Image 1 (tube, rainbow, N blue to C red):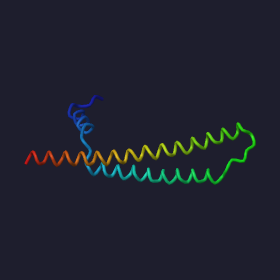
Image 2: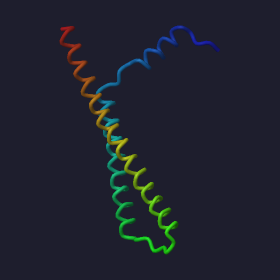
Image 3: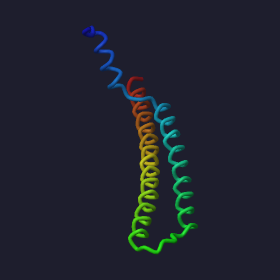
Image 4: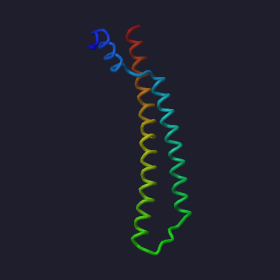
Amino acid sequence: MPESSSESSQSKTRSNAMPSPLQCVLGSLVAGGIALVLYNMTQSIALAFANRPLQYHNVTTINIAVAVRTLVVGLSALGTGIFGLAAVGLFGLGIQVLIGQVKQRSTVD
């Protein structure tokens, strides 16, 4: 079924609409909370690996175990960084949208 022109224009308007500052701040809080949880998890993983030294005698086995440990901690830190930067970006977007709304209201008045 083809969409009517009013429905397609409404969907285009919704997709192009700026988010509200509240949506940006709430998204920032969610992303920041996830980043905080991932940061704590990264610390726990790193401490667990540091407190349990490798007890292998084969050099190849030790190299593989070190690589896996590094990969696990690195991926956890990467997730922390991504969510942390998303939180900062969303908060900045919220401030930008708020400033734009204030400027728009002042030019209208």
